[in-house]
Amino acid sequence: MNFISDNTAGASAPVMAAIAAANDGNASAYGTDAWTVRVEALFAEIFEHEVAVFLVTSGTAANALALASITRPWGAVLTHEESHVADDECGAPEFFSDGAKLLGLPGTGNKLSPDIVTQTLARFREGALHQVQPQAVSITQATECGKIYTVEEVHALKEAAATRRLTLHMDGARFANALVTLGCTPAEITWKAGVDVLSFGGTKNGAWAAEAVIFFDPAQAAEMKWRRKRAGHALSKGRLIGAQFEGLLTGGHWLDLARHANTMATRLAEALAAQNIPLAWPCQANEVFPILSAALQETLKNAGVGYLPWSQTALARDTVLPDGAVIGRFVMSFATKPEDVTRLIEVFAAAQG
Image (cartoon, rainbow, N blue to C red; front, side):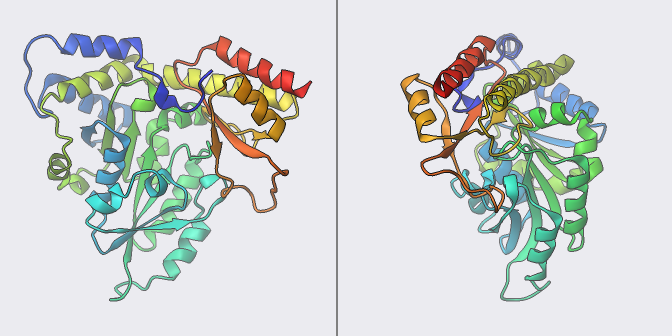
């Protein structure tokens, strides 16, 4: 019963089959292969827009190179203080942007609000010699607390950012999970709402090592081919990334995988609610965050259940955890088995007596 991360799952069968098929014969190198060309066209179709697409092998590369492309070394990126780009990229965004500053902002459920963006921008005088210049806002969809930005919320953030001509970046490591919950089109939650650059996640959703940086204004991607090469992500056998995305995107497979993960998470969340075990944040994607008493923690440990203790920083201000309690993060993936969720629910029920 391993619910530590959706990174622990392998690749889906269609993705593995696509890799195997692409392995036969010879193909052009460095992203000029037929698979990558077809995937670029698929992305344009999915997002109903002309796009510039750059395939890489990790979310760290996708986020760092995306932000480096839209931020100068003396610039700043406004993001949540516990966002993945701020907390979990080992300084890669700062490194690849040659020193641009990440400004960590508060927000319940790890979501930024237009008000906090506006208040922060007011602290920075445009053109001031002694201050970094805010140039981008980065949001995570779904957030590190499993919360989802609605179309209206993304649009409102873009309006706040636009007062200073800031670019809006979306870290979409779990973009598919957010999308199936929202029930909107990919276009509606991205460029139509004001997103300029998207880090499109594949690895957490059925791929082996496949991420994409998608620019909705190709002019903003002018430097990206050199940045990707310099970062070591212009793979000579790029067809093996293109093939993964072809297997993932064809026929809506990526959405089917995300839908299964979300369904498993919803099932757990509803069972915990029935047992009166509170959640730190509502379950909106494929993550569940129950508040675990000391006794529950011990029961889960003895049962061999894998999960992560999670930060309390993004709780609502009036929320106080009981003594000894922690927030647990339980992540479902495309490969999560219903019977494992059943066993986990039974463990919780047994602990409740």
